[in-house]
Amino acid sequence: MTESSRVKDRVKLALAAGALLGLTVGVTSAAFFDHATVAVEPVGATYDLAFAVGSEDVIEQGNPEPNALDLSAMADIEELGAPDTATLQLRVKNNGTTNAGDVHLTAGSLLQNPTPDVDGVTRDPFDVLLMSVAVEGEQATDFLPAGDVDVALADWPAGEIRSVTVKFAFEPGASDGPFYHGRDVLIGLLVTGESR
Image 1 (cartoon, helix red, strand yellow):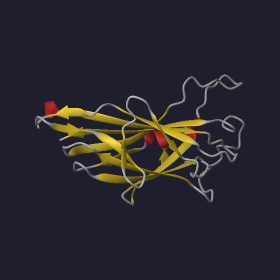
Image 2 (cartoon, rainbow, N blue to C red):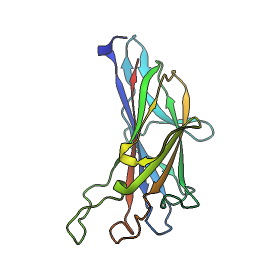
Image 3 (cartoon, rainbow, N blue to C red):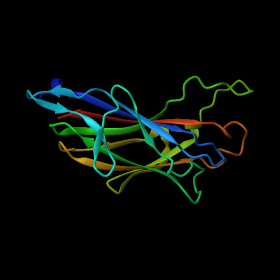
Image 4 (cartoon, helix red, strand yellow):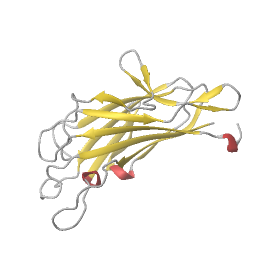
């Protein structure tokens, strides 16, 4: 495949987190979005990233409507060093018929139009969120600021499922002040890749 025929596919996982700083409200739902499967050269080959869900590896595209995930068993997102760490297990599949080049996992805030605080400053709890990511049991990042996370999953054969473990924590002291306490955080995990 030539460089010009590379095709990108994006899978988005949106964690709708009712994780309140300093409180014990659990994450209850999530949704993910995916573009349609993309056909690439050679003729008949496809490149598609998807989530494998449940014990039977049901493929969930989240396309065109988002699919909800039950995350009620996930611990609350608390400050770094808390006894229980909010942990999310993802299983991402190269659901196409062609091998993937580098696939990247990144994160971003999905909070739309946050309200400014009484001091006029707009704050998003995502800004004080830390993430740790392991792929197939190997640590890739260890509690970096969530916006700085960029994990590469290289050389991904067609049909292979990879296990990704994501842990979330807030920066120490984030719940001490009035500005982040009681705020929702909306986390978007984006998986982006290219065919070879």
